[in-house]
Image (cartoon, rainbow, N blue to C red; front, top):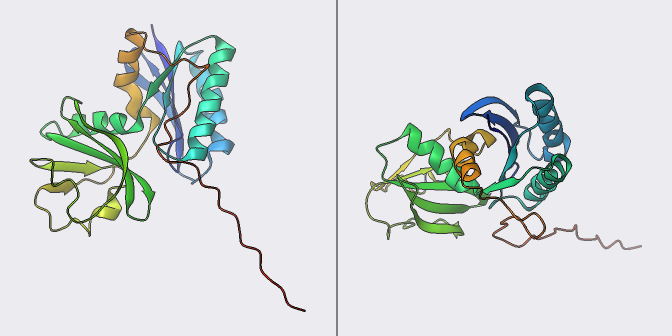
Length: 225
């Protein structure tokens, strides 16, 4: 019996799930934006209390939110050291693609998109067999985006909805709503990596931020008088 605790904190919402023998037993999620610090550790504690200590932790390692990834990584490392178990690292983009290819087995080219800002997304491109055609990168989407990729392309994820109007004229693109980042999407790939003993080196591992963190500070107002 293999039990895996999955953590996803790369996006604006956070979630944790517990897997056992290839099935998802339970999932906890908060749709409240930027609630990672408040809820994520509680979710994991509740899942472990109800279902037992996991044999490994599966972690969304990015790309995504700098703060969210830091919170998830710190929690995963703490649990791993505390229980003496390994951590599996998975890109949230390939997990989204794996979830979509199950729902749409006829789709040949999968483009998961995570919301970055304005018209920018984090994306990667995969075949139906999860062969990587393009590595994860940040992209400011324009009308001719992805025209160098032949055939019909399926776009999905929390960064896809804002592209609907811009790409409405494109017959080579289909945008599907309702597939968003979630810990439950790590199910199949986490067990595969566990069986291969493909674990992170916690001493040196850092999340895949993709973009540098930019701290915003309020400008001071000048007062006269």
